[in-house]
Image (cartoon, rainbow, N blue to C red; front, side, top):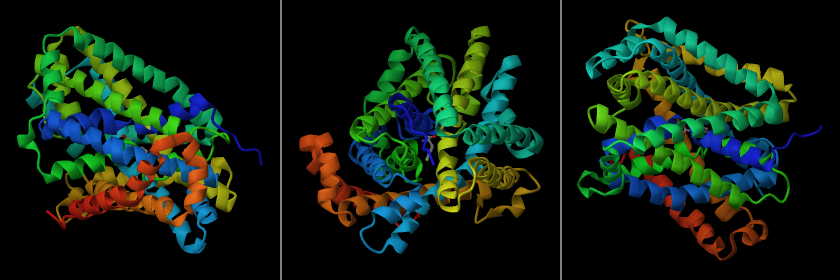
Length: 446
Ligand code: PFF
């Protein structure tokens, strides 16, 4: 079987496309708002560098050495207990589970692209009402756009690594960066840019508690697409002799830069036209449309462009959330790509319908357990439990299970003197951090 491989730039764009997603443009600004700006940004940058970058290299290394789907890669590489270690590869399931709600959110964005073409809410209260009506009362709109997302994502997956995933990223990623840079350039001309800059870079430690660290680590993982087999599966299609460290660096750099550019731009707009740095998940869907309204006609154009950029970010991440399980069924069960893509697509699509219903009045009481809707449960179980466990396992696998000489032979030439620091971080810093995050997100420590 001839295996399609990414080109060098194709790999970097696809991996960056996976990393740059709703997490960067939607979530990062609002958690930064929640934790008061600068101090949180500093903690986040620190965790991205110390923990995120190390795990990124480790995860890419496993895929690169295993060269197969995530389950088989662990099985091949484990020096002993292969039957046990292969289960580590089932972290790929987390991606598919995340898609249950990620596709629904992409659907909301499609809806916002369409509605922003004609009208924007004139006040925050109105924007809030529009959003809540969609979320709690309008099943059909969410269903229709979730269906569009499912069809688009599945179609790209059926086309494979080269003709689907690489091609999509080669087009959407530059387009996304162009849109964001254009809007960022406009933000630079506004008076409130310096206020946004100050908010994001001058630390106010009073808003920081131990939770901030946990949220920062959790978000670093999510935004870098770690612990779900995505980077691993993409790296299995890297050419031999590729430089993993360089690729990982570019992905981390692009992901972080785009999050910061998006944050600066959004806060500038919110200071200038809106209610300041809004908090909570409503930032992009509620406060921002109301701020765009204040801009006049240019606001309509910006709103449409912004939501298009957000959709692009979401779609390039979405394919990477599903691809690991697609690859699994192709590799281990000899399914055709077409069959694997459609089956995985149907999985998140059909269960996603319940995620929509779990927010709809009348249905939500049947799909809510212990004050969390099914939608929120999926987010919680993946982010709080599956992801840190996978991070822990990968760090232990590279740090303790695989022979050091084997890791060293590949990584030392690439990392040079930094090799020992990276290895130390994987052995000690990362496992401890992941463990703490997991316990506290599960509510044990708080
Ligand atoms: N990194 C993506 C984001 O920031 O939205 C989400 C994501 C994609 C997580 C792919 C995990 C993954 F495998």
